[in-house]
Length: 245
Ligand SMILES: NC(=O)c1ccc[n+]([C@@H]2O[C@H](COP(=O)([O-])OP(=O)(O)OC[C@H]3O[C@@H](n4cnc5c(N)ncnc54)[C@H](OP(=O)(O)O)[C@@H]3O)[C@@H](O)[C@H]2O)c1
Image 1: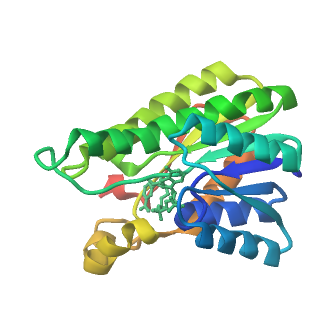
Image 2 (image 1 turned 90 degrees about the vertical axis):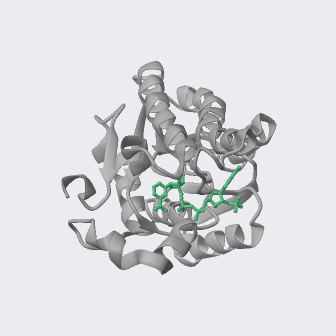
């Protein structure tokens, strides 16, 4: 279904930006969301419009239910129906158990897991009204492997997989809910790590390179397309085959 609203959380840069641009090319009317970086969010909008697509920009912190309700209402006012939600907004800061404060643990859980719940809860009634919907949650390789410097991040992303399966059951048959677990992807989130050790990282990956954001956006595009219509409750691992090595 095209020409309906698609909300991509955290689309001011990285995977979210590439996804917003791709979904607009696919014919969706895109809400570009950010929490603090308005300038980059406006750049995403301009890129979409330069390619002939339609977009609005809405500031909302996904951890705040009132912000999220406004995000959904503004999208509905502008575009009418909302058919797609991509829960992409994410946050991480490396810390071992010793270093991790309760506040830092909570913040990562709030953005990555509770933020996805907040957005799904706000948008689901609109999708039910439309009789069609697609929710894609962005998990991570770390949900499966764990992390020796990010128990908060890995736990939040494993939680996203439980949320995905639960909502897939609850929201069927009108709405499909799936997850993507990207591996290493070139974005501002990973720029420091890649600057320091991209070669070592690539050596661990059968495809011998990290992903570019549009490659993750392409998988999301499939899940929200007609071709993805019989897939729900699934996790697609887009990681260059890193498990096999
Ligand atoms: N890059 C990778 O290798 C990789 C691998 C696996 C999974 N992932 C996941 O993929 C997603 C995108 O990652 P990325 O690498 O593209 O990250 P990124 O470059 O750091 O971008 C994160 C985006 O999330 C937004 N954001 C952060 N907190 C928010 C909040 N509270 N409310 C609304 N928006 C918020 C940011 O906007 P503002 O700056 O305006 O807040 C930004 O647009 C994340 O969920 C991440 O965990 C990434």
